[in-house]
Amino acid sequence: MAMAPGTATSLRHALEAALSAGHDEESLRAAVATALALDQKEPSSDAVPEPEPEAAAVPQIIMDCDPGGDDVFALVWLLALRKQGVCDVRAVTTTEGNVKAPLTFAAADKVLQLFSSAMPGADVDVCSQTPAGSRHGDRGARTVARQAYAEAVAEGAGGSGDGFSDAAHIHGCDGMGGLSQHLASGATRYTEAEESYERLIRELDQHPGEITILATGPLTNLADAERARPGVLRKARRIVIMGGALPGTRGNITPLAEFNFAFDAPAAALVMEDAGLEDIVLMPLDVTTKLVCTDSMVANSLLEGRNVADGSKLSVEGMYEPTADGAGQFLHDLSSFMFKTALQFKETDGRRGFLVHDASTILALFYPECLQFTRALVSVAVSETKGRRHGIDTNGMSFIDRRHCPKLEANCWIGVEIDAAGALSIMIEDLKQLLSTMPHAIPPQPVPITTDPGVTDTVVATTPAKAPLNGAAPA
Image 1 (cartoon, helix red, strand yellow):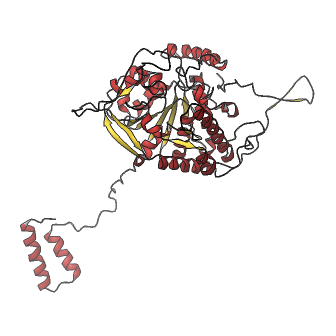
Image 2 (cartoon, rainbow, N blue to C red; image 1 turned 180 degrees about the vertical axis):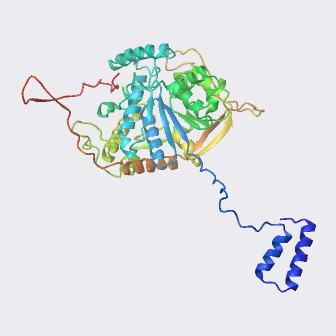
Image 3 (tube, rainbow, N blue to C red; image 1 turned 45 degrees about the horizontal axis):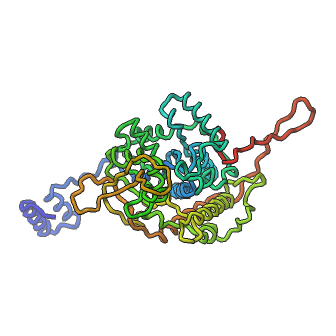
């Protein structure tokens, strides 16, 4: 540190005088302090201490999803990280996509219930999406519309099987390979849950600059939030999206487009281009198709050879229990279903595994060392859907300009390379750690009974209402 010339001279004179007088060490320190004009008074006992800097807050996450087998794995991975204390999950907002809205709500709700024993007292709200015609109406109109829609979906209406209106051919009629009927529901019904896009607006308005959105389904909810409150998405700390396929990468719904962007192309275009966002993190098919979770990863690494193939970990009632074995059985059974459809639709080059596309959003946020990114302006084509599997259909196509010219409006960090082996091993280890924190058994629950007042000493056990075949939650 440089010292002013006058200060240096005074210090030298003070030290020379002290040394010539033979002063002790304490006198020398006093001389130095005097020369430097330091206050030697002891600090006051009632002085207010300097506040310590606050510890950096963990990411505050809202997951916007459409479960979907890979959404489920992404959600459970997020819960595993929450258990480790590295993030907080504020809500799960569900959207129509892989299956219909009542079913995506039910799937998210039931998965959270299954893993609730790992985080007692830390409930996560699940929000639902009203059919488009009544989504912006009053609460009464929404409730009526949801009730009618849930009943229609429970009866099997709305699924065309064409691969455009949903992806039930990949994920099963309930989004989870028909396993919903073996999972308990939470207390909130589809008809009663908070509207997904309104929850996004509320959280972003109340906590500007704090909320990170992980979007693993069609961008309908984000677009609705932006339409209702222009500029609200810019209040997010970060938005990480699984969607799109860069030029040269084949689509998975049409030759040119990825499912999430094509399902609601106007929503994708609004979020990617019109919302004025500058730092979207985008995980396209270019990297997600390399994330193949294999049979051996699940059976040998995640479940460590547990004998779950025979279904012995289900309860007497045929339900997955919120225990390590019950949750492990569920993940095994869901994976087994996804293995079959992945092979059927030739997604994994003959390997017994399935693509965990949506887990890439967790990877980008928490383990970015596994990825390489490029900066670009991403645009989304919106055109009339042709309604056929092959042919010229650009709806939902995402593209970037790779020419060497100035690009002043880049809006994305795009994942272009991935350490797939490292990423999958991290996911499996985090999931395994979550299972290790779950109880091995739950206390026996008394069977609900009612007494028939007309018959003395007769006890009649009540039975739950028969669940819809596709696992829809009660409306």
